Every structure is written in structure tokens, then in C-alpha cells.
Image (cartoon, rainbow, N blue to C red):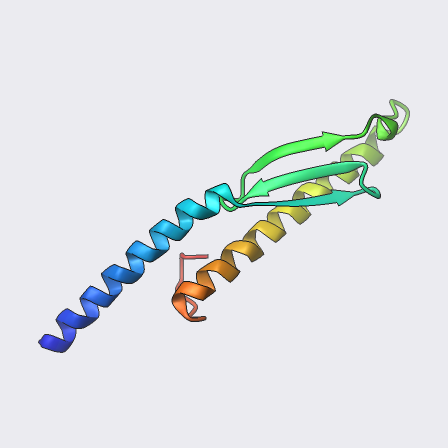
Length: 103
């Protein structure tokens, strides 16, 4: 029984560290660009887009599809980078264990 109690304490410590890391990740950001820097997107560690910047030179009313593609590419890349950042930070806490629902 003592071993089980010890394991529970360790699990609670791990849970506490993970919760703290998740809070800290909300303040960390990643930035990505598309179109040679014409579109910039930033995301936080909660996979939320926090800013989109579009250079006026890329805004062409005759080619809206190109702008849509650039925004879509930058947003998807920002979300991917955010997910990679979270996985990396969580891996530091969990020692590389793949715990479902944490990343």
C-alpha cells in the first residue's frame, strides 16, 4: 500500500507541474510568415491565433484567392509550431512519456 500512496503523490506532483506549464504556455508565442513575409501570424501555447499582420502590398482585389491562401498557410503553420512547442515543453515534464490528452 505504501508504494501506491507514493505513486499517487508522484502523480499529483506531475499533474501540478503540467497545470503550471499549461499556464506558462499561454504566454509563450510562435510566429510564422508566408508569402515572403507578406503575411505574419502569431499563436500562443493554447493554439490560439493572437495576431495576423498583412502587408498592404499583398492585398490585391483582383486576386483575393492568393491572399486567402497566404493567410491559410501562415495560420496552419503557426498552429503546427504551437503544437510542437507544447509537445516539446510537456516532454520535458513527462520525460518523453506519451500521456494521452496532455499534448
